[in-house]
Amino acid sequence: MMNDISQETIRYPASRILDVAKALSGDVRVRILEALGEKPMSVSQLAETLGVAQPTISINVQTLEQVNLISSTQGANREKICAVTCRSIQLDLPSKLGDGLHQTEEIHMPIGMFSHCSIQPSCGMAGKDGGVIGSQDDPRAFYMPERVDASLLWFAESGYVEYYFANPLPPGVELDEIRISAEVCSEAPSFREDWASDISLSINDQLVGTWTCPSDFGNRKGKLTPERWRSGTEYGALTTWSVSESGSSCNGSLSSPTTISSLKLAFNEPIRVRFEIREDALNKRGLNLFGSGFGDYAQDIILAFVRRPK
Image (cartoon, rainbow, N blue to C red):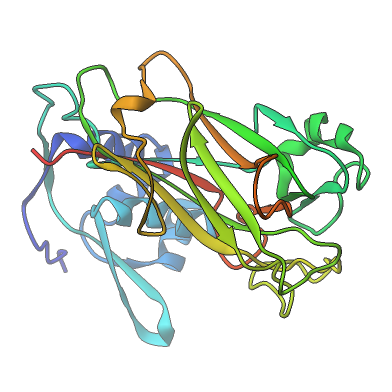
């Protein structure tokens, strides 16, 4: 029986060219589309037909689903049944600057990939398994190559970590907003619920805002925190700073007069993002910064560029 194709042609806007191209760039994914050309098949049937391991088929099917080239339903025995969604695709080519970009472009930065820091004991880093990287309370650990694997970093009192982000937008593309989100909290010996710390974020040396975290959270296990971790701090609060032409905000509340124009963004210059406990902070009580394998949120630092609507 031939596959019941829901539509003959899918049209993709210019902003999805890269997504579709990446999805079609793998040999296994092209072979999956070939196998589904005449009839739907289960994941196990695809694995048998193509001679590829079932987990590999599942991963590649997900990639094709993300660009709507494959749809799936649940068959007998709860098995995933896959089918192609069209016979052909149409790609709209970009005609002006920014057409090939998504309305929101995101860069995900692992917390261990900071470019500069100022750290004093007590301090440290831990990997996804909960093991300490280097030696605890030794600032030299923050300069070791293994730091890139960190899923948690912390320091007491004042200090900072700074990250360099690439600017993905070409000259001439206007931004409506820049957003930065990260899971953070204060840093106390072990943990303390009544331990406020003023966590500041700046971009290109311009203060975006300061959020006063009320606690070093450790009253329960973090949803993603490894069982091996037994050092007190367990999770943080997902905090979002944003900058627009009208000023800056933190968690939706106005926080500073810094605007996008004042950041002086340049296409060929890095965007410097700094998480800091300032020397003159009223609550100078350290910082915990969580990566995707620790705490409550499965994310690293996210820098989002939101373009103005057309």
